[in-house]
Length: 169
Image (cartoon, rainbow, N blue to C red):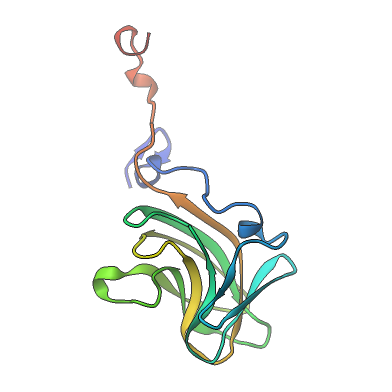
């Protein structure tokens, strides 16, 4: 990647402030995450526990995150429950239940008991609900923590080389 002022080019125009904050991010208390499509959510020891209902598409969601058509960087830690083993195809992002090729706005992960750290870019498509879910559910339990969503796009980048008497003073 190209670098400008020690900032990788792909990140130099992104915000450094997450739009998911406080208890919705660190789960130090009850936040605004709710169950989705039969799943259940509860804060447990500083993590959000998501218990999946048997069937299709179940998980947890956070409303009013992101704007349709805008690009974001999503970071979060995920782990499966002790004794659960690996959980394949955990969906994280927006519009997770409409995976048509022209509407993909999520990523799939295999979540392990040891835990993984997800870090990806995605363009929001759909209703503005950030979700962590599974398509085919058999009562699995997984946890999320340290959720951050950073808007990507143009923000001011002031380079000292452009400062001249005519431009800045």
